[in-house]
Length: 475
Image (cartoon, rainbow, N blue to C red):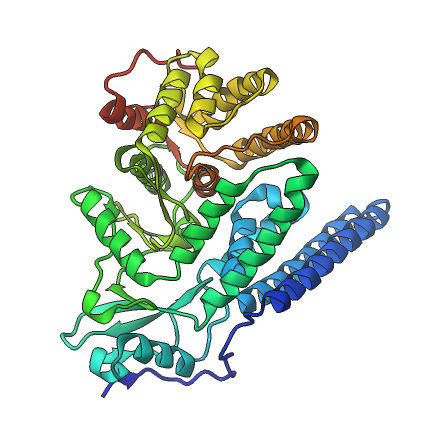
């Protein structure tokens, strides 16, 4: 008989999530109004108080920011699905949150990565038994009642197989796919509204998001991804991928090798700001960078969910565990080749071809003004970490510059959309390239990782495109 760990939770956990499309839209609308009121109240109070007491103004900022962030955490944690994923993005994407609240949102909403509100154990047990077609005590010798982690689509429990191996069991929330379908229908309604107003065609991007998110609800597909990436990265000195136990897995239950390591915040607490490329945070950051771009260029796969909750660090051994392979986008060979050529052109000091290659890679049609903007934005900002053969440090200052230039790009894009309609990138999977860069950039900036990313990038591109030309002179 399976042993269930104690103690029993002292508070009653919920047994289901809101799955009605309109119910979820109402929850989001209430949260948006609450956050808007909180931000407006905070700014008004700060303006009034700052005239006489700047310390009190900062204290009010902290209190109001904490309250707004905790309200958002509580609602999104309960809703699960795409709503919770949006909260995860707000924790890492600095441009989604007012600057004065970024720190508190990063800290509070960062709990959504793996510490969302879990569902009751009895509900989880029912899912396990229904999906695997056997009583839980026939599959596991031990199954912990309290989850190790809980996030957008499921929660993870520590367990033990009959042979004694410790495992992590990811169990999908019941009917979370219906909740996600409701969220997608609400997004689809927004797409229908925007299309005639802005003459915007976002069909390919929306289809990519819809397909990848719905695929996350099939853990058999994630098991395939885990095994594929395990083979692709086998033998790597740093990157590790958990093994899958197929005999204890199904469509809504995924049993994997139990791995351990430091969360990102623990890594930052225990290891100081890196001064050398061999320091723990720099080594880990370089490994994530190599994993993201190596997967993209060498294996034509986008690891589309690079947030802090999906990495565990073992700095004493120089190991980075990569978790959660539910959201993987396969890319066309032409896209990865053209993108590699675009990066190579930037590294070789040929800005005149970057915009052209960008348009060809995404199957878009940038205007001459957009091409000029892209040439500067791509090389001076997006590609700054890898266009010079010198060490580069990711930090918050770099992220702030990226945000400023990203907003300039958004204003330019909106101006063009209003003027001539949006000729959207029609390349399959292109929408996810921005997601991986934003996620990776924010993780590396939190680490303040320092490395010669030019050398890492050049080594990857050389395997795809052949030897490259000379680098831009260091400076």
